[in-house]
Length: 484
Ligand code: GLN
View 1 (tube, helix red, strand yellow):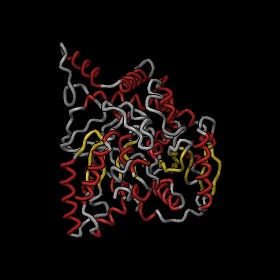
View 2: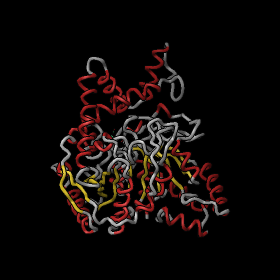
View 3: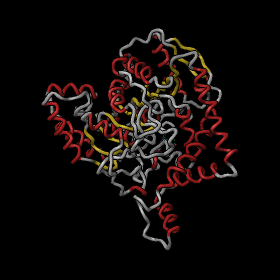
View 4: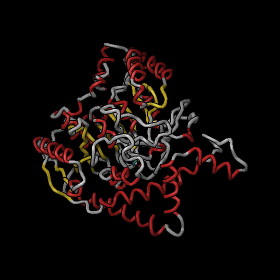
């Protein structure tokens, strides 16, 4: 049952082949059976079964929407009413949210069933899921390896077929990179497309919610339900959301794809390089014309991102002070000692590192030298993309420079870890949509991701290309051996 796609489940539910309650039990059992992956922080069994009953009633009344009765999991930084929402941190270890994030509310209204909340890097800071207070997540393709981060739990769940689909967030690559490492389709839409209300903030000008799924078709359906204007998020856009599903079938003939010279340089694993070249051939076969483009400032995206993201994080995380919610130390003398000790005990090493970097680059003596310079660089990176998109409709390249690495391999070298974001972070800096689709396996049998970057607000072309690519390849259909 679990190997079916979201659309196959929707069809089976409508036909009455099985009920949503049966489907929910099936996935809950699978989650328990594969708990060694450590992919979930909270299992919401009671909520799931309650939602399943309501979905079955809706189906029986013929009032079902396309997603009614489909189980999913949420990354544990989406606030869920009455349910633990930890953000992967000790400081929110006991935080039960009093309200739902807009994304959660929208998907609940569509009739989806929440199975649980997924493990993640603390405050979404990381590329390997090793920064979680709740321990690392295992990659279902090789349990000694990382699933990618920071949406690593969501990716492991979908890859292991413990749920058909999951939500995630992407600040510098956290949907696309775990999608690549786990053989999934992951989309980060344009900044402003999806409400950030109730999504615990890391870097507010970069954060964006999105979807991890097995196919572009499945991702399109969920993205459609998550998108749209929200008056509670001042950066949310009022533009109409296109019919993502209708666009999937469009032939690609006449489309132009740009290959950035900078994304095919040394430093990319040769197996990945080869897989991307093969993928480009498939696109050419489908009628896509390929042109070479330049993104000259994108090689500076890592230093730019790692100034701006920590700066915003240091401000956003000031609210975790032990006073209003979350963890409070029991061991303090006065108010200021309470703040300090709470934060010392409540945050992990990477979060502290980011707060210190962020506070430093925002301090009056260094503001111009670091923060202002990084803002200027951000503009140049965005302009690179604008210019490139005068010559092409989409940009394609690798999602990551390597496939999934071993747990512990990079965890004591932050800079090495940051370099994983080399192909993804510039997309967030420019606010553009990005998609990763499976494009092969390396010599160790580990999945490889093809990244497709779109013009601002053009998620449609990405999903269209992803879907057409998946009609002519079967990389997305593979399931890790011991999980079939
Ligand atoms: N790896 C990046 C970081 O550590 C991106 C994380 C993300 O997209 N949430 O900040």
